[in-house]
Length: 74
Image (tube, rainbow, N blue to C red; front, top):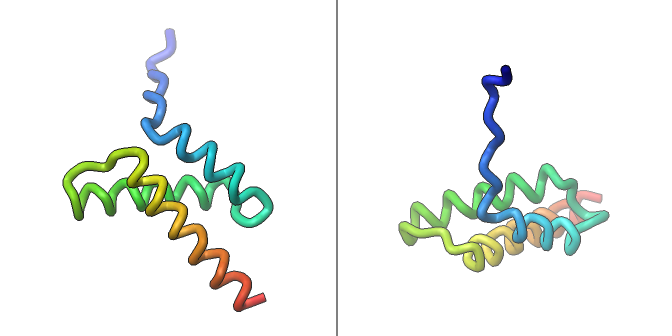
């Protein structure tokens, strides 16, 4: 008997998939996931709700900034 339950799929799974494809070769999947999670919590704090389109826009901006910082260091 397995006591472990399957995690519910993220409501942002499609957002993560789209951003992973968009930033493939620039950011790892883990980085994209962290940005989506940060965007989710940021949206909740600011607006009280985290609609997937808002989370996607915020996460995309995070990823662009991270790419710019990486290019300046390299």
